[in-house]
Length: 386
Ligand SMILES: *Cc1c(COP(=O)(O)O)cnc(C)c1O
Image 1: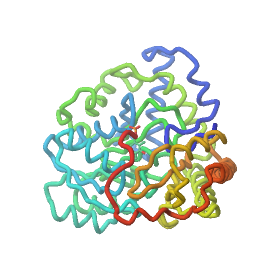
Image 2: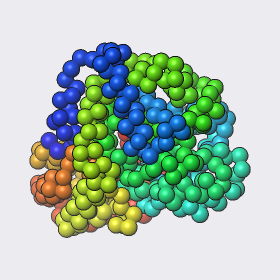
Image 3: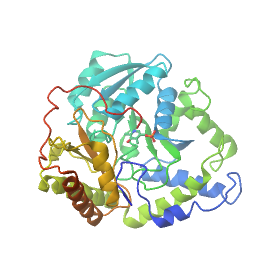
Image 4: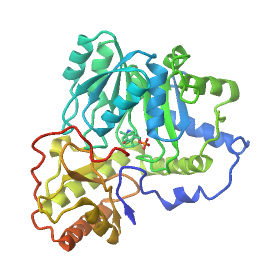
């Protein structure tokens, strides 16, 4: 089966094989593995020794985002969230339920937020201490670029939390150039092509130490993760970690490096996205985004106008052809989405395009242009659980 979803992604056999062992997390053979993962991840993020630290948490990206928001934004404090997609909606909910005050900056999910919009929103409200931004918006496929937004946040004297969960490892970000970033967030199971199970924040040490006491949660307090590392060592965990997933992640990092690191991975994903974008157009369908705003991680496609098209039967027909895509959409208009990340090549993508054609034929979908019922842009997601 070819897994074309934006995480957890298709992995390489060597990566999966590393999970097939029993491991004690505190064992002296494993501690260096974990410590070296933290170090390698910091270097990958462009973090500076003594200035940045890798602070992992067991679990998923949402846990990591909640931890970062709780740790860096004081209880009752204000943060700005450019709300131009489904994952930004989730960040709004996370922050609100954590008792932080969200100032939402709504925008269409078809283009990135601009530096001017961020600067104006920050100028209008001096009480905002942080901006929390989604790097790659996994709902639609647009990219909010930290190279564009970071300087605006910096100029306004505010701090940035960057949700780079579906971007890091492929899209560039170099923390040494971004003193405004308190935390860069990502997980093991997306562009770094590991198995799911562990989340990472690469964070500024001065911000982390200044934030002690903010979180209102022991489990989600990144300043406590840092304090624990100082006390017990960089190879030690506060709570039981997903050790097998970490063992696999170490191999995934080797493979990332061997491929040529972030630039090579980005180049492959871009080629994947190009092949999917051009492929569906050649089949008569309409991609959701203009090419100018199309990121390399997922391609979303308008659902065809033909009444014979229904998403779940389409996904099932595609699965019978060996390709698995998401069975839900969370853009502002009905779409289906195809992940272009993971251990997947442009050749695989061309095969998937042929499978899409086969599935549409099987279902009798002849009118393949956009259904057009996206005129009233309602701010809803088709599904709320991913
Ligand atoms: C995948 C993803 C997350 C986290 O998802 P989890 O299911 O919690 O791991 C967060 N933000 C973005 C942009 C994502 O793509």
